[in-house]
Length: 493
Image (cartoon, one colour):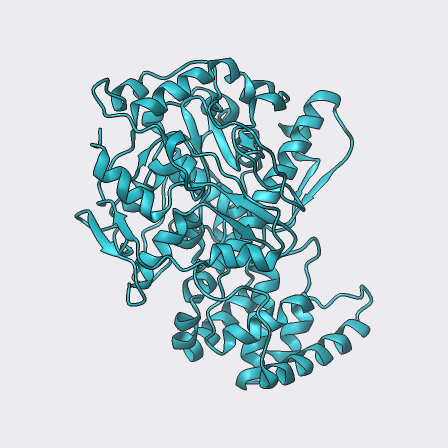
């Protein structure tokens, strides 16, 4: 992986320096109620936490990525980064208006002021970029709505929608103004869409590098910090030797925080040297944490969608936002990113939500523009009943799913070969810039790894009632309605 690592640049891996942290603390003390209303308080606080990037881990897990399903393929099954992970680990909201929502007239006035200052700074810059230092020098300490919007513009540019260059992006200033006024913007979908697209880009680069040792480099700007923490949360063998105690009110990401000044003093924080590829190739279902956020952590408050007892709640306008967020997390949809629209298939990883895993339904989707894709994502779900599994719910699978997966033995070489595209087409998925579509039959599974694990036998009992998902005519996969119907018709294993 060493030679490969030199060909990959993670431009989206940003560290918050001391001046930014000071500005963030000041702004949070002044605007905490507004940030909570806009759904960004935890996200801003999480962005101040630092991680020591583990490039070997990132490349090792990326080798397991399947661009056709937007999932990781392991010897025992599929898993992926979901909206739940983006919401819990990074603090971004799955609810709200789209990032491209237009401003009203007063917002446009503030935008013009910020853009005028942006142009002035850029003209005076030798690199023709508006750097963080220049932006902070202009707005930090100016007070008022302008400083607030300027801070959020910097935050969005560096920690939400980073680009190849470390600069303030004029394109995010309108989003900053919305947030500064307490308007909730659904930031989780575009963040995850960007990550899916870059994971697919990285996977293609790895394939090419392995086959012909290309001299080309790949430049990634998505938030790969999420990939690393997701892997730590899920695989015990790959996580650091210890975590931090969580202080009251801190975001969950603080468990893994490692300030720059401490890294030189404590280099042993990282795991002992190990082969990431080997660990993932030999991983067992028992070593994978399906629901890490349901484990008790001192001073971390469980969201309401991790109840002690399972519950069924009718979906309506008065439903708590936590439950509506959970409903969005388990619904098959298309994620509107800034540069692409990506397919989201939570029905392939139902066990990550404590739901019964059945054979994924075929999904027929259209190549929608971002506005139409957003409307589909944001479609009202009133009138359905949402099943919320209890906190200790374990992963379970229907027997028909087990049979379906076993049929994938012919495709188990996928993860090792990293080049046989013909084995990974059960459901169409997003590409880097456009949606790739197909009429692929979902009756054949995608599998990876060299052996079938014994643990599947543990969760797939012969007497379990089968629910062939091929008979479902809905194309929304594990929607809230289907999740409820499946629980009524099946018994957990």
